[in-house]
Length: 162
Image (cartoon, rainbow, N blue to C red; front, side, top):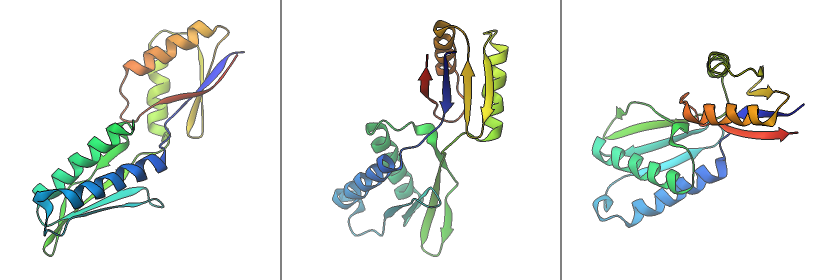
């Protein structure tokens, strides 16, 4: 029976390259010369820390990060930017990375599929959703439907089996 999995996976090495490219751009930009501005990726906690002397610098670095993420084909929905916080003479901004489907999002996706009227079997299996049906065309309709929707996380479809 044909099936596929709906997942939300983040390629951390691509995120690391985007952060490195942002660091290089910070080093070469004239408006950051002489300023204490930095960006660093923590792969264990899956977050990015941006530090600047004022909020404008932090926002500019975040915009540069989004640009480099887009160039590396990483969906911007994977970024969850927190509000900037002041600490001494620096402003800190934490950007959390969304990796994997949480149960609430998986339930929303499952409910949206059921409400769409497409007759498929959808089962939540940990951090992925397995969609099965007798016909491939119906599965492709589900993929097209899910691509049109927005659930706040980037969705990928993998493990397609006939």
